[in-house]
Amino acid sequence: MEDLYKTLVKPTSEVLFKDKGSKFFGYAFPVENEEDIKYFLEEIKNKHSSARHHCYAWQIGTEKDKIQYRANDDGEPSNTAGMPIYGQLQSFDITNALIIVVRYFGGVKLGVGGLINAYKTTAQMCLEAVDIIEKTIDIHYKITFEYKHMNTVMRIIKEKNLNIESQTMNLSCEIVVSIRESQAAQVPISFEPFYEIKLTEL
Image (cartoon, rainbow, N blue to C red; front, top):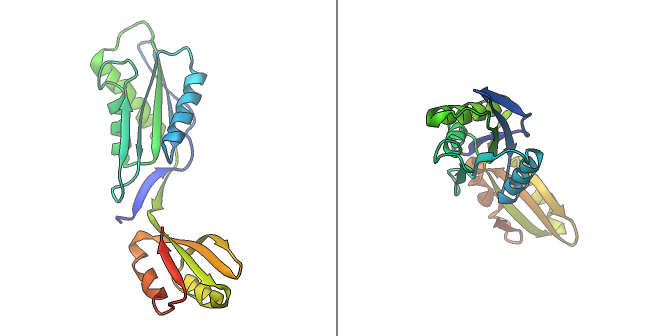
């Protein structure tokens, strides 16, 4: 369905691909933003500080919002590392993910074709080694109301299977709820008859 996307459950264990003495260490991480990406890149660069190439590709977002991506060859010949890695993210239909492949040169040049194959294969090994899940694209709403309307609000939340994300209960109450995008149209309609209950899409 259009409000579903695939991503990683957790970081993969390290994978290793070898070709003509060169070693390619691969890692995959679930990420939500560029701060996550920067953190994991620094972590891997520190782990493999003696390696010459730390190549990577990432994608964030879905077709429903704005997809962002980047592929980096980090000193390898143009389009021999970053794009083959990114191609595997596309092949597995994965988003909100980062793949890093670290290369240690083994003394024998692999050539353009060899490099493309090595980075592609290492990225593929990463995604084959990690758990992939489907997540829903959710819409979030903030419900603002007086305490006297609590029963009404909670009844609608239950009837519409809304997920409570956070709540503040005082004389003036606020609850943040979420629901998958394909079902979101019914939410405003449910609250329309109750003019003292304010619903705001976040």
